[in-house]
Image (cartoon, rainbow, N blue to C red; front, side, top):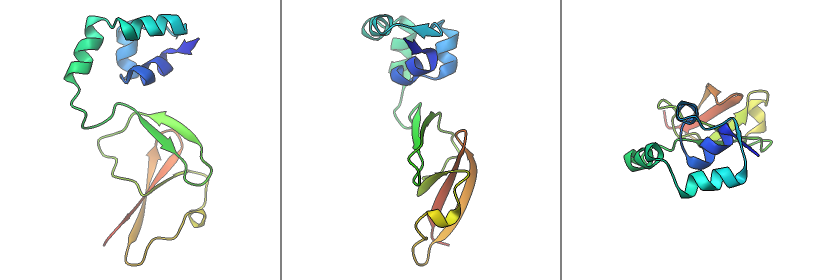
Length: 120
């Protein structure tokens, strides 16, 4: 059995869309395969409207411990140099390159801190 969230991930649609179109909270692999091979009109339209500029889901992985999580990327997320869980210390990451300025962005996914190295 797969969850609605996993189905949304695999279909590359927002979770809100999965709820709105009554994808069940749990479904079998056979039901999911049927949905994927014979998509309803709303899913066909959604895929046709995708521009491909920004993915619907992003896989976040901690640079230090390897913890992963799927999250919906936000428009304000820059290109991160590193992602780390919020309980890791800054000295657990490689130091910033010479001449680079390091900034931290809290609130990425459920527990991540985004690290951005950029020139001042």
